[in-house]
Amino acid sequence: MLRLWLSLLSGISTFLPVLAVHAYAPVLADAHSFANPSVFRVQHLDIDIAVDFVRQQLHGDVELHIQRITQTSSLAHTLILDTRDLQVHKVDRLDNNRWTPTIFSLGEAHPILGTPLSIPVLPNTQKVRIRYETSPDATGLQWLQPEQTAGKQHPFLYSQAQAIHARSFLPLQDSPQVRVTYKATIRTPSTVRAVMSANNTPAAPRNGIYTFAMPQPIPSYLIALAVGDLHFKAMGSRTGVYAELPYLEAATKEFEDTEKMLEVTETIFGPYAWDRYDILILPPSFPFGGMENPRLSFITPTIIAKDKSLVSLIAHELAHSWSGNLVTNASWNDLWLNEGFTTYLTYRIMELVYGKERWAMERVLGQQSLMSNRKSLAPSALSLVLKLDGHDPDDAFNEVPYEQGALFLFDLERQLGRPIFDNFLHQYFKHYRFKSLSSAEFFVYVQDTLGKKYPAKIDLQRVKKWLYSHQLPSDLPLVRSEAFTRIDATRNQFINQAISSEQLITITASWTVHEWLHFLNNMPAQLNLSHLKTLDQYFHLSETTNNEIAHSWLLLAIRHQFSPAFSRLKSYLLTIGRRKLIKPLYQELMGYPEGKKMAQEIYLEARPGYHYITQRTLDAIVRPAHK
Ligand code: BES
Ligand code: ZN
Image (cartoon, rainbow, N blue to C red; front, top):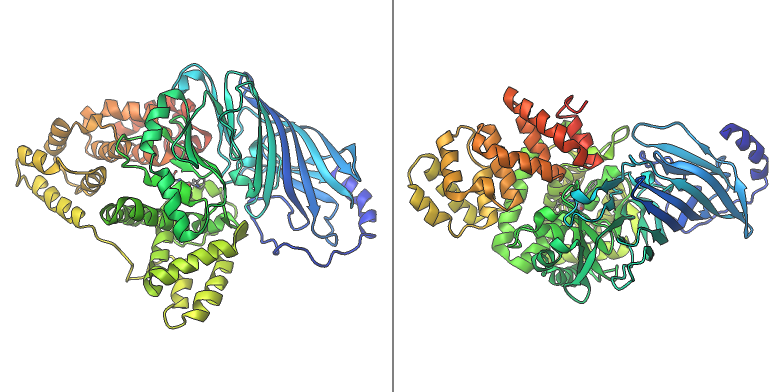
């Protein structure tokens, strides 16, 4: 069919005038999209969809406003969109202000990329309108039963589009090089409220029809929707929380410093471009800690620790409002441009809001996780710039783009001095505002700015190595924490039984969550069961309410087969779906026969409650129990 109308339309294209100049930077290759944005750009979406909790489907219409970029290409008469598991019912086209139905064709399904949708367009086509429905298995949506929510009364739906899952709930050009504005009407049962990565209005009546506008252009992976029994509480004049009632108070208290974080970030890196910054608390099955959906970060409830110990995650998602949402990686090979910059900004925010000591502790913990993570990665995953062609970009999620990216920026800061580097970052965010760039373009920008202005300060060869080499330089800008040096001493005494349990209780009384994490994460491989017993007896680690401490403790418990912790281990794995917290536990369990059996049993029970992204990762580890 595709070939048929290509030949019908090819006659027309020979008469088209050539557009010599256009406002867009040349489109770089994106190995994770079928779309042809160098020929047509989708600029705006008008979405009108209904949320069907019974059939676990979205269905409705999306109108795509398209701009023709070039007419010389042989494909200048076909708009190609990304889809995955979508049923397309019909496509209409607006040519010269008249809607007419058009044929369309869905290509072959690709295991990673989904299915290209090809739509013939004319020289004067302004819009296409697609009527479609999603699959109950849409990889970018999680449908939760009331029992899986905090309030237990109402169902919950949320989307997670990064990296290439937007196409499973919207037909579009699913590449971070294409930005769209959008308007949306979301139709739901009237008992629940819809929110989006757009202008949410908490005062809107709960009547089952919610309308949104996102006036700033965003890449497709930032389009987001959630529906549930959501309530709103303000934190500051520009910040607030959307959550189910059982989380609302605790979350607003926990994240009350968000407004301040927003203010300090603006003072260094330039004005906040997105109007409001709100936080949405999701159910604990959310596969990530947080997702930087513009105006509304999606956040796991597992960081509500009651002592603000895990709020760097909020700083991280907020920082994406500059690095990622304003200035975006051109492809998933350049993920470090989003995550490394954001990790660097996060540390800067944490220093300004919580001081140097906490800053140092968090940096050391970050350095440690990078170094230990690097040991388990393939060489191809060890450089900042990746080659993900043929791979699922979800697999690029490890510490390298994050902590190694941040170390690189701390290295630049050390070479140039903080004032110069801050000014560079400020200019960078301004220069690439609402644009996407590749690592190669980043290098050229560094060369043209810092390289020209401060040739004596910056080593451009070293910058190149940071981007492309699998090795780290020998003189890394590493940080030390004095508090952690004291923890190391206490740990040694504890292991060598040089202090009594009473002394240990006295010493640890003032420890922060980070000190505990450092204490637990750096235990030697050889540890007696009696050590674990002492820790559990005096510090009740199996009952800790801090999910990061629980994670570190449970890893130790598995490693040393400390069975009193296993009932907590089970409930932890059954309630939390955050991949970063549970993947290492399953991996550790798979390391010995009884552990493997336990992992498979628990996974069988837990898997249906996990999000697709977590399921996919764990299927590869805990095979073949779920079959
Ligand atoms: N944007 C990421 C999450 C993501 C990355 C989703 C790649 C899909 C593909 C988000 O900002 C993030 O980094 N989350 C981290 C936060 C942490 C590093 C503070 C997480 O979820 O663990
Ligand atoms: Zn991030």
